[in-house]
Length: 245
Image 1: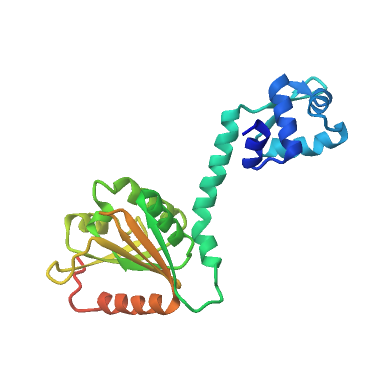
Image 2: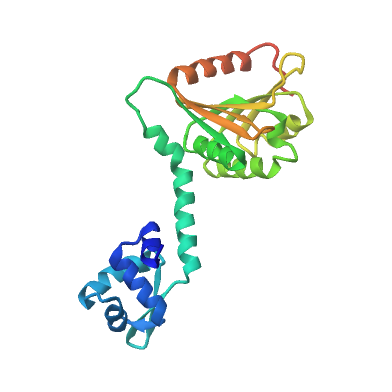
């Protein structure tokens, strides 16, 4: 694959590729020289260069009254494309939420690995109301401490309050001690009636399930499922078996 074809795969059109390659070859230069090398009319050069500057493909350098241009290193081009890909990955839950919004079937989104769990957490933070759910000691275990701390800090920053129910354990007890400062209310159930390795979150018309042990999770977007889970949560929350130490 020739350089122009490679750059086209990275999102640059023919003229943009020509300018970048010309600038890369001759180094820091004025517009006239780059346009001439790229075989592009100088009047078109500035509009194209402006776009490439915004995208970080080339840089503009002022030397006295002169405007000079310098192509970014090829590694930088790859880095920029990787950033765009990561941004797209982070936007997937929103894009999927738009998909088939007129349909009546529940939408189910599956995620794997720590990055996938992060995407689920980020999706809950887009809901600005109260989040409710059932937690697990694994959420605040040593293995997941960095992940949970990062999520809690973002939630606090967004002023999102939560109510959670968990089993009696050292991890959940430690979580409860920080309830006030972390905008949370935690209640616990005796271990003989509730233990869980899976976390369940309920927010708006969505519910999420995260298995920290096996590093996977899913989001279900369906108002009836979310409503049913919320009713179950409230029944347990107000039950006589809750221990509120």
